[in-house]
Image 1 (cartoon, rainbow, N blue to C red):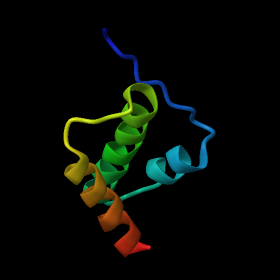
Image 2: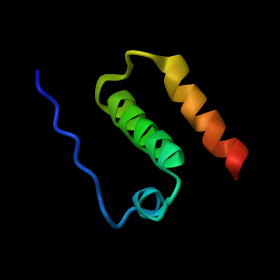
Image 3: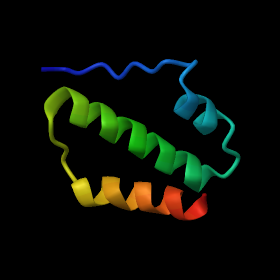
Image 4: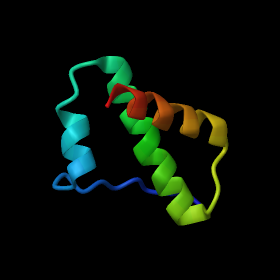
Length: 62
């Protein structure tokens, strides 16, 4: 099955991601949004530790 990743440009996380100037942090936001979509759709992901690492790095920045 081929999945389609759709985003809502009005969602607060997407707005936050769009305003991110740091490319490394932007990449983490992308990882988190894609990971959330994978969990919601399939209930699992390829590399959960990478997903959690991206979340932890973003939370440490806050």
